[in-house]
Length: 205
Image 1 (cartoon, helix red, strand yellow):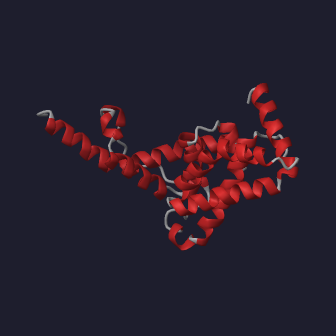
Image 2 (image 1 turned 30 degrees about the horizontal axis):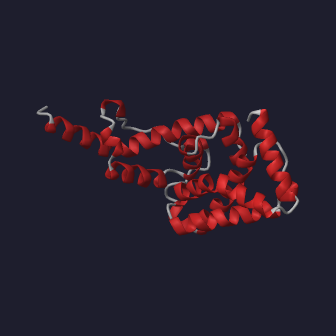
Image 3 (image 1 turned 180 degrees about the vertical axis):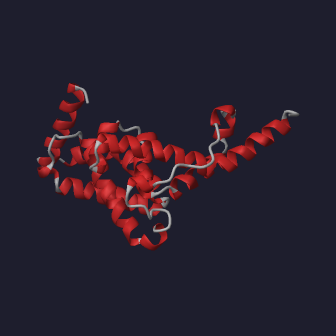
C-alpha cells in the first residue's frame, strides 16, 4: 500500500471512529463489491453473499476502535468477511466433509489428469457455459484451497494480504494456491478436453 493510500484509508477509519455516517457510506461503496465477490465465490449463493456483506460492515464499524494498521482497511474487511463465510460453511458441514476431508495440506492429492488450456482460443473461456463450469468447479474445491484461490486469483490480493486474511504463512498461501490451480485444472480437464475436440471438428481437424 502506498503512503497516499495509507493516509486516505487512515483518514477514512478515523472518520468512522468519530461517528461520521458519510465515512461509513464511503467505506461501503469502496469495499462492498469486493466483500460481496469473496462471499459469493466461497458460498455460491447471492442471498447469503448479501447477508455476509451486511454483517461484515456492521461488525467492522462496531470494532473500528480495535482496528490496527498491521494491514490495510480492505484486507481487514476481507478477514472479517472470511470469518463470516467460515461460520456459514460450518453450518453446512455435512455437505463439505467429502470435499474437504484432508486437514493436512500434505494430504491434498496431486491431480492425475491435466489439460493445457493454452491450446484453447480465448472465446472458449468467455462463453456462459464455460463460466458456469468454472464457477461450479470453484465451489467444489476443497475449502482450504478455494479460499486461497478466490483471494489471490479472483480478488487479486497479494500473497502477503491473502496470508493476513487467512492467518497463514506466505509459504502456505503459495503452496495452497499452486495446489488449487492444479486441482482446478484436473476438475475442468474433461470439459475443456471435450471442448478442444469440438473445436477440432468445427475446423475440420
